[in-house]
Length: 369
Figure 1 (cartoon, rainbow, N blue to C red):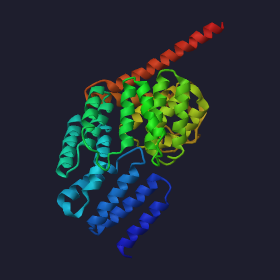
Figure 2: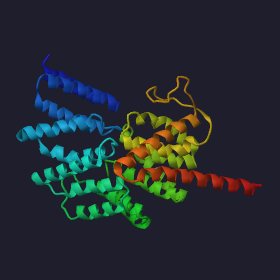
Figure 3: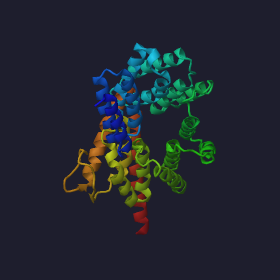
Figure 4: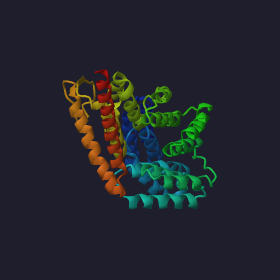
């Protein structure tokens, strides 16, 4: 059989597949065939597809080596490949790199330098470069870095891949971190008034607003944005990259609707298998409040989860200890890598919230007496 036909058949199977992992496996088979026939063009195009499919998961294990291959292929023969795709995905790849605790800050800075040079070399504006730097500022919880790079970003004309909705999300997240709620709500109206087919960023914005109000114990306002986020989630059915936001939803539900929180936990916990370092760290912190109450739960989950039991019966204390220890280990590794204590503070803030909840509980009990 002609190898081109074999590849095309695999791509048809990929289109018919339902789960992201199945789609990725078909693409990897096609890449192996292309490599076996030294077909560089197929190898390039298939790796682009691989990157797009893995963007809908919680990991980037295939993306990083695939993107490195694309860069090498382009550098070896620039006339053969399209630089637009590489440049348009570079910023996303940078985000994945600083979410990996095994990548040093020095390596991250080298990647930023390379990205900036490539943008300049090929005639793109530096708007996406400063957007990426602002993302890194959020990751470090350094609002001075975020503000500086948002201001620099806005001095440059937008490239074709600089989406306004992405930048609006960044602006809203920034003003929320600065506790400027009124301005954030003003910016959010731009989303409500727009007809958007791509709902990931509205979902992320609504989740951020829900989290903001939840932390301030304004639960009616938080519930309003929970409902908006939940509505978006129904249109992101197979997009596993939503797990960081789903963790936030579970935290809110653990306060207001534990039954539904457990439904979300059971429905989405399998998506955390092989999740990137940052995702599993913050997801673990967000679900601790749900697991804190001692009880026995029957859960139908994947055998691939480290704590899986064949009888499907789980002690929540065991689950709490597993995710707390995981989070505790990861936050210290991130802080050591980053040279600060930002991640540890987030875990401590969770403990403080739990302590405050317990104190409020005792007050209510004694008032009844």
